[in-house]
Length: 326
Image 1 (cartoon, rainbow, N blue to C red):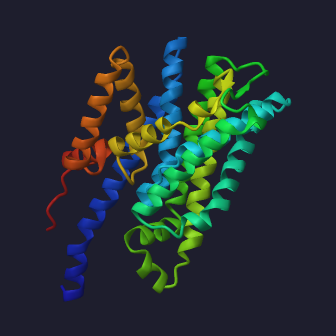
Image 2: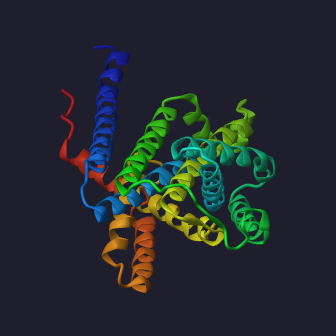
């Protein structure tokens, strides 16, 4: 055998191993999404499933920024709040909930595009602080702006959907967000995002337009968050700035992604299930819940940087060892 042929023979098993590992990860992601899509009965179960699916969609949106693009944003509440207020106003004027959610996502994406030139001048920790300041500034503006109800907010006058209807809408949003992110990861945008995440200066020297790459990811994530904000508005009878633009939204989304798995498709799904299930289990002990959640995040970040999804993927790979090459 020639030297080139011998080298190809030695390189083939790692390629097959990577392909099988990728197939296993895709299989696990599909199984988890199928479990979330299983029809559930009972109002309580549907409400819990609704929250899981909401967080799954938000986690996919944030993961596109933080996991694949390295843009650690703490401004998720701004886009969720914009979506909630836009949907509330549109449904009060006769527009059905689903079109209102889509328009709300477009408004959130437009807002992201408007503020992106200023935010993208910042990098690293400065970008993170800038997005947090943006969300807090928007919340304070909505509290003091009487045109949209001020600190009282907006009362929704349209008929609220049933719990089962909201669950189906949340399932569709989560599935669409997961599918859209998975589709984008098969395009050049995925490579561009990873290049910006690893070293933006080098990527720009190689000809990558980093602003355009970050703008696409930022506006898409804002669109998905705005849609989820509109979905949340359909569940409530009143929209007010403290809840719609609250920092808790941002904290929950980041927690879901870190626990589930940063930079993975299945991580936000698994993280949403785990986080909501833990919250329901410790519902009667709110202080204990915060302490345990914080401890879990610290342990995962320290000992399992790829999250629970990475642990599952590694375990699956160990169960299917590769044969030694002849």
